[in-house]
Length: 412
Ligand code: C5P
Image 1 (cartoon, rainbow, N blue to C red):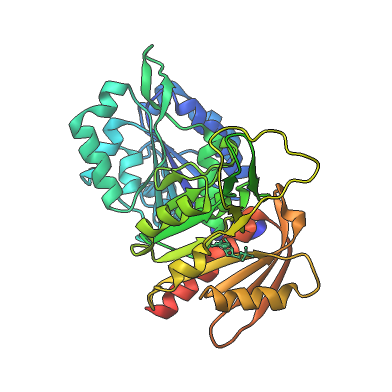
Image 2: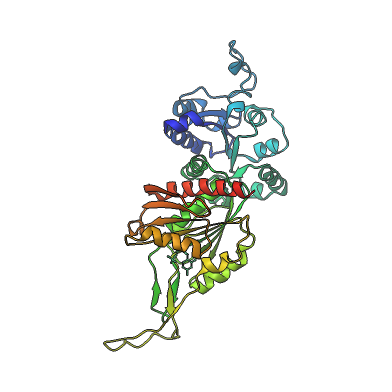
């Protein structure tokens, strides 16, 4: 975490909403994770939570005014709207009230939070976490201002649906601090950038029905695909996510992730064919069943006799079919799971046969787990291998994204 401490300064702008109390927890989590976290509070925010709470969890004085009454000689105390704003790596507006969103969208800065937002350097990543009454949230002027911020590169987190402080149920709750923390953390650890790139990810297993009850499938939890999708959006991409059946908790969730659910290899191919041409990067992490029953019964097959023969037909090789029309500026990455001593040679063969730019080799220990043993095998002319060893799938995803962003740069 020390590395992050050296690297990232976060300025948290707190707006005047009941959700301001959630920003205290966010500050504490970011501080514990090693970020240098500074807090600026609007006058309205100070009506909900005292600066002292934020001071305690950030271990720093809190910015509360643009014009301090007793500044010392230090420019930092004379110009609180410039310091730490001009040095910030990340700015988070949470809760982002309609008022602050509007002011920032229009370049106004009449209190410390909006004035600080005006002073952020261009390299600073900006997040905003709206929180307001559902009618305020759907107000066309508010939506226009939200769209303005998004068009300027601000990343919106939420709002979520649920009980609002004003007593109604609807869209407008600030996203929970744990989730905001996770998104911000991902955005930092993923060093590669994929801004505005379109990433197509094929994930999960496919299931090939024998009858309405039985099927053929492969082990696949969807966790690696989820980590790749979350990592890609954190790096600035839009993700088209095509997935076979996996538990809901293993599905990624973000406004920039569009999910299509499929079941069989044929339906996964059909869904991917619609998205392939527009993708800058395609990641094949699905465990596609190799065979499907040649015939499917519409009703449950009667209990077979002692010996039961099932005739199987090969499923389409989705990666090979799609990548036969791969453009020069498209990057295609595959995953291979092998169990024997010839694993690397087999993975290399697949890399060529499926026209991939790189393939990541992993073993059966990754089934359903949060970790795995991974080796990155480069395609093209250099054919280098990097053994990453045992890693969290989230970390593996970040490595992949970093290398993909490098490969993309090379095609430009
Ligand atoms: O199954 P196999 O070992 O050949 O899979 C290697 C890669 O090819 C994986 O990335 C997998 O998602 C992809 N694949 C595919 N269509 C198949 C089988 C595998 O796209 N029918």
